[in-house]
Image (cartoon, rainbow, N blue to C red; front, side):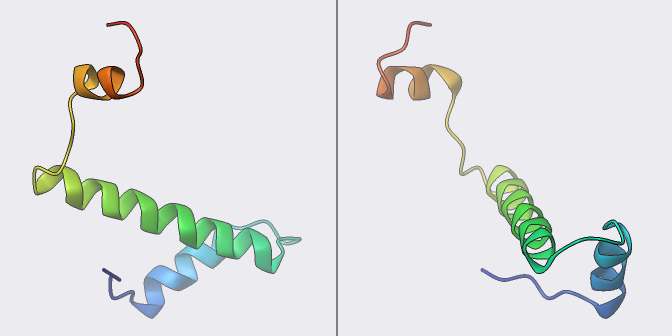
Length: 62
């Protein structure tokens, strides 16, 4: 589920990195952005779980 990225968006992401950023820093920023976008889409599409359900799954108290 990759999102199409405009060059302008890519430039903005790169421009916000510090001057001494590494390739790993850039890859991390791309990864974080993609995970957030997927989460937002999941939320919009109703693919979420309630806190009580998650707590039950992991044996945590409510």
